[in-house]
Amino acid sequence: MEEIFEAIKIASKEIKEVILLGDTAKSENENSTGDTQLKLDIASDIIIEKVFKRIPSIKEIVSEEQESIVSLNEDGEYLIAYDPLDGSSLVDVNLSVGSIYGIYKDNFSAKNIVASVYVVFGPRVEMVIAYENKVQLFRLSNDEFKYVKDIKLNDAGNLNATGSTQMNWTQTHKTLVNEMFKDGYYLRYSGGMVPDLHQILLKGGGLFSYPGTADKPKGKLRQLFEVFPFAFTYKCAGGDAIDGSKSIFEVETTHIHDTTPCFFGSLSEINRVLKVYSNNG
Ligand code: AHG
Ligand code: MN
Ligand code: MN
Image 1 (tube, rainbow, N blue to C red):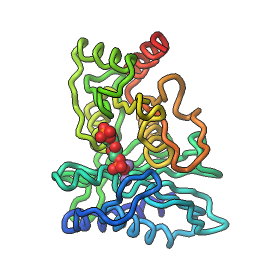
Image 2 (image 1 turned 90 degrees about the vertical axis):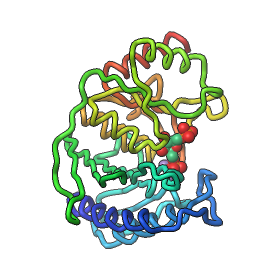
Image 3 (image 1 turned 30 degrees about the horizontal axis):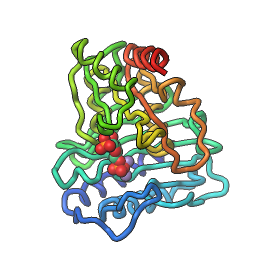
Image 4 (image 1 turned 120 degrees about the vertical axis):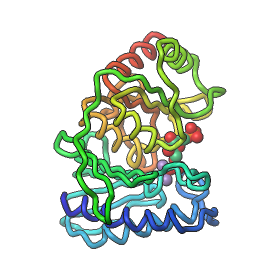
């Protein structure tokens, strides 16, 4: 596992350079979810695939930016699903973006995730590793990722970040959000799930949600590349993640690019979601 974390560090230093100097234009291609890929998405994807190809313990990899699974080593132990550059359209306006990695065993499913990593490219480059029930923060300094601290969520926080457009929210979701603001929660939403979830983790708690909506009942965020890795991070930090009615770890994956509604938070906010969603159907 350590060699995978080291590979992600190497890739992240290269991706940082691509973000600093790369072309933010759109490419001619669409990914499997139908998004037009940016040249930055493709460049980051190539960097990550290159570093993972050198590691014997990796059996298969799959990228949000690619159609199918790539087999690397028949005898490898780990399967990695990754989103090379989440929120890439925000580079254009100089907001923070990130990479997300889910490390699985046996097959790509929520119950088989064993570690997760994300990297935030903001004013600073930070990396958060969740493994063996610990969540640790590292920061890039003098070309090295240095350990900063362990991360734990409080039982409750005061931040609220919720995706999609209000126009398409269900009545249940509107009720949830209104009640939270009435109770004093602060709106914090940049449109990049990596910095948005990072903020909630480091400020002690709150709720990030990307619900099922009228236009997209299964939400927007992808299970393997985005939702399961962050669910794992939040769980290891003492919080939790649900799809509105059940644990994210019970969500079944039928296709590698499947999406799911998702809610990540500290325990008090997750209980609130369960209460509101079960009362309002
Ligand atoms: P990606 O850049 O990989 O396509 O996904 C961005 C994601 C996520 O970071 C963010 O939370 C969400 O899309 C924002 O979607 P909305 O603009 O619909 O809120
Ligand atoms: Mn993404
Ligand atoms: Mn992406």
